[in-house]
Image (cartoon, rainbow, N blue to C red; front, side, top):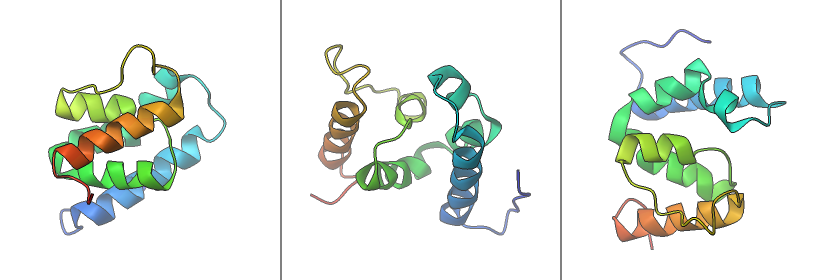
Length: 105
């Protein structure tokens, strides 16, 4: 993983960590393995300031951001019926983000 410094903005650090995570999980399908990669855990460690950045990634394309979002926010807008459906889960989180003022309407 690339070395990050305190001089980077949260957005820059998020981008570096996201790119590293995607590269390392490109061929994985197990959500547990995908979510335990160090760069993903580092994104979670960045806290609430990255939630809008994660939601913007979900707007671009659904991906395995749900574990991070739940860990950071303590929320889970995904119903049991939606569980396992990446598109429906992304839609639920994006709606949650809009309702909470983290995304533009």
